[in-house]
Amino acid sequence: MPEIGKLLIGMGVILILFGLFVSFVGKLPGDIVIKKENFTFYFPIATSILLSILLSLIFYLFSRFFH
Image (tube, rainbow, N blue to C red; front, top):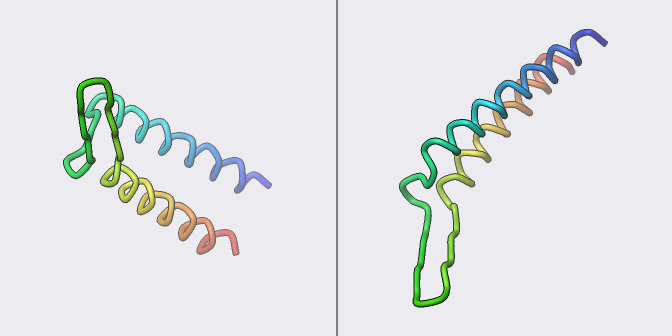
């Protein structure tokens, strides 16, 4: 079980770093923003792709080392 604890700590650190990155950088190039008079639509497509890649890497490493 100590391996799972280390994995959870590692995943937590990665998520904190990603959260800090998104907080300071804000919108990534490729995110869609449409502003009208009283309406704003924001679709973070680049952020979604980056998050998907990051989570895929985490789950791949998890399955590789803890299978």
